[in-house]
Image 1 (cartoon, rainbow, N blue to C red):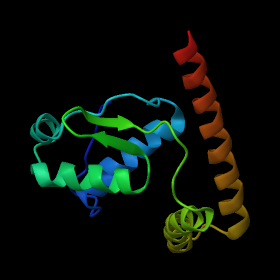
Image 2: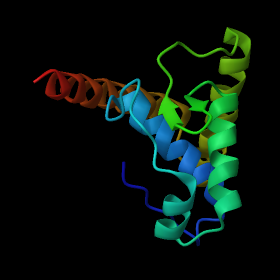
Image 3: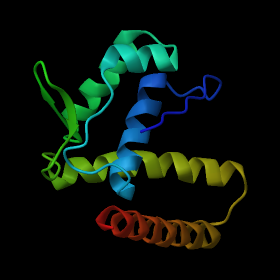
Image 4: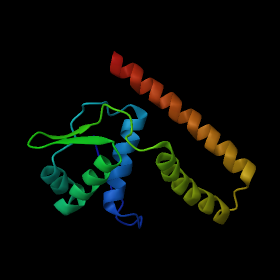
Length: 137
């Protein structure tokens, strides 16, 4: 898994790591049981404090995306999210609220926004299907 950080984005680095791991899992690029890089080497590679990577991994574990085994590392979780549906919907709603605000500021109308969201969801599903098919061989 390759991480790319944007230090000028204004988004905390640990959240960028969280989002990239979640995107990899959602797209099928990262499969259940895959190992995440250890905290120290990843922090050195990204040139960030170890606590930043540790904070990202803690958040991923809290959200049920990864499991941590003491002395063995962090792995992509095999199970479904431990969060209740209302908690998962709240997380999605927060991200959608940001997208709606951005669309409003960029003068993208509701109809166009909904059409774009639909297109992006379809594109995501296609990428996920291709990644899953590629993983199967």
